[in-house]
Length: 252
Image (cartoon, rainbow, N blue to C red; front, side, top):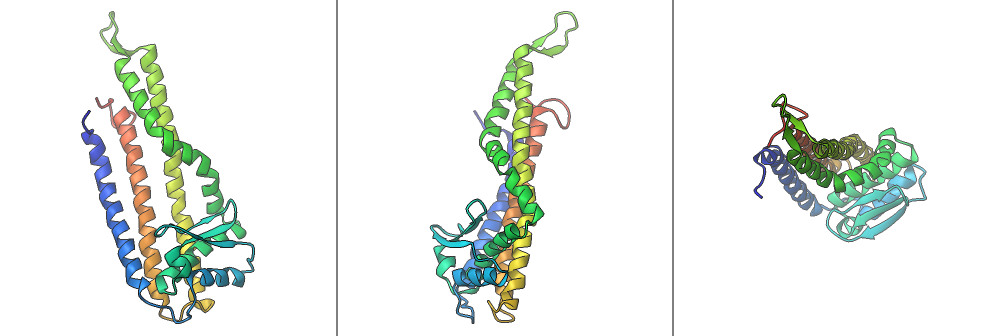
């Protein structure tokens, strides 16, 4: 079965955008990974100092595998830093580590958008895993469950076709949760970076002027979240158009 041209129309722009910003963040990270911070702090030490300055002492800072796999886990209150960030004494490492520390501050201060995002996690996980299966199964059932009314000559849905359309709508609803998660992630990530940028100089983590390099890394990383949100929105639009719920009759 060939690729749906309509899907390509919606997915290709998002794919190109995602690839561009992914390459951009790697390039910027590599650029400032070679610039050592004058404070001499590692990423882990900078994050710990930022948290301590805000009166937070219960976050465990761990080292994790991978490249730019850094993340804060609110479930167990751990800050997980990739090896290059955990041990790095450069502007890129300090910037990324402090961004993740910003998420810990969000939890400690009950930042509203983070609470909303955390609440969306279960539904978003289910939606991202099963929405495609449910949507396309429903689409196939609705396509095969159509008949011609012998009295009016109009096309009608059989019971199987009607059930298929119910599955289509369920698939769209499931994916909507994933879209909501990606959109809500934007203010969460922006705020974490804003907290990090503010702390870099005020807490003596970097010297005046050095924070620009760290900020450039964080700005590049934020664009990858924008690309992810755009991709999810375009996919949702594809679902709506493909099913005929938006823009007229169902596409065959």
